[in-house]
Length: 143
Image 1 (cartoon, rainbow, N blue to C red):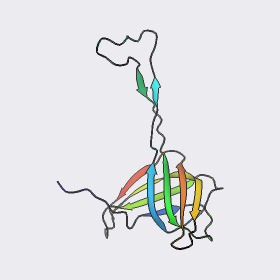
Image 2 (cartoon, one colour):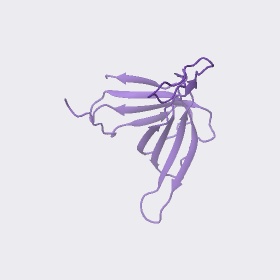
Image 3 (cartoon, rainbow, N blue to C red):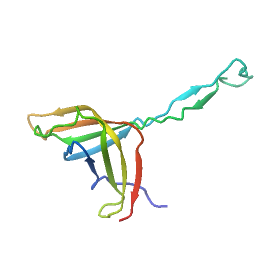
Image 4 (cartoon, helix red, strand yellow):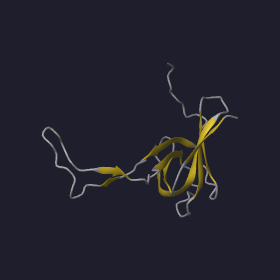
């Protein structure tokens, strides 16, 4: 069985409305989650000997698509879309370096955070945090 290591080179992000663009160093997807719903009721059985817990849970049908954080080269001329409404955002990953096939994640998202660091020496960097506003669609392209 081969190794399934992926390298991010060639990935890109597109903001449909704000047209925000930056030189992206890395992307971080996180916080995908769903809650559990307590379904315990008056007739739920008590824990038997050698058992731990007796509460009953069911999965919440709603899933939080989480967040997307971009680490970027900071440019003070760039205007991040922190005041904008949710817009279509598409993140495209290359399957393998130098290949045209890719996987895209797309959905409505809005900016929640923006930070920048301007050191005395070294490169200026920034971070843009996005919150997915609903479902994220994954599409595989085999161009």
